[in-house]
Length: 82
Image (cartoon, rainbow, N blue to C red; front, side, top):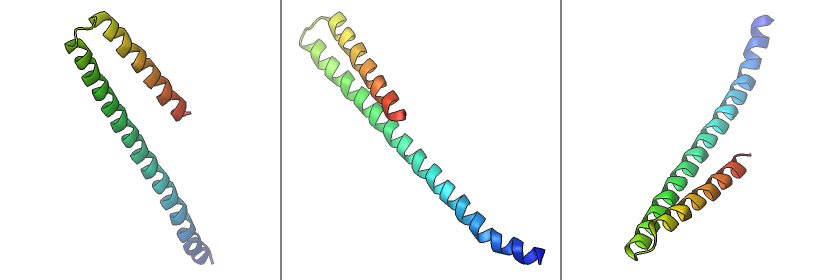
């Protein structure tokens, strides 16, 4: 009797484990995608800053602009994390 009960519970347990694994996998993929997009956005911000420097704008103002953009970017990440 114990053997039959144990065998019947295994498929249910495996389904739960597989569902949890799928959630973890999709969460990891989402986190990797978000990280990749953030890196891309920072690279584009750097290119934009370089263009501003080549246009002979003040480097200090460009640096302040980059810091402000990075802060807003970090706020967006934190909001999406919650």
